[in-house]
Amino acid sequence: MMQLEKPILFINFKAYAEATGESALLLAEAAEAASKKFKGSVALVVQAADIRLVSSRVNLPVFAQHVDPISPGSHTGHILALAVKEAGAVGTVLNHAENKRDNDFLQAAIERAKQAGLAVMACAEDIERAKQIAAFSAKPDLIAVEPPELIGGDVSVSSAKPELITGSVASIKGIAPEIDVITGAGIKSGADVKKAIELGTVGVFVASGIVKAKDRGKAVSELLKGFG
Image 1 (cartoon, rainbow, N blue to C red):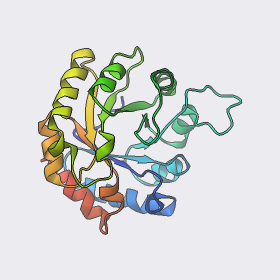
Image 2 (image 1 turned 60 degrees about the vertical axis):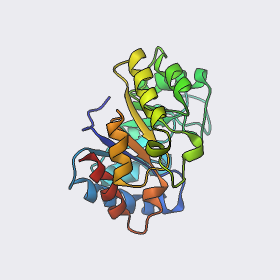
Image 3 (image 1 turned 90 degrees about the horizontal axis):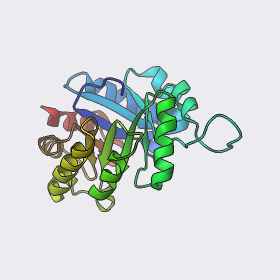
Image 4 (image 1 turned 90 degrees about the vertical axis):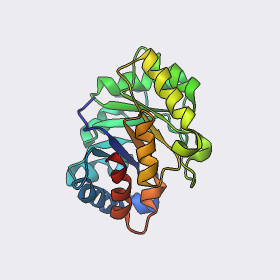
């Protein structure tokens, strides 16, 4: 995986209007400004159409939200890992709770992403799925553990389900020590982030807490404080 200073804050732009096109660039610029004041890294997970715009204007790593397990050819409507790489992305997310895929698809997509030179963060909804992904022959660089019922809510995974985080870290590291663990869902404060790090993760995956904030730079700063 490309070298990202740990811990890492991944910001998921999803398909929010507030994080699309020029608004995506404004959010990226706010995140970049905030990131200069704190330790760790900030990575931006943007829509495919915004990868080139964002990656060419800010000096933060950009991840795609998805790629398909295809090679160049007749695949209208699919997302080619090579195209994502050429647009300026350094990595991709796969299997987010809002775009779930089965293990055959996921493993093939990881292979294609790796062939294109992309880092991969695969999402898992629970410990069992995290273990399955960690056992793939083509392994992701990171696994993000996010319980779907907490995504977009006001209760953080680090406070509601700390055992999910510690159990995931132990299980994943027991299978593939080289895979780093991220967590997300409901994370809104520096205290939530600090707790996630204490539980063994190398960072967090957030969306609405930043994208929907009135002062998005301030929201990024608040979370980065949790890195110490």
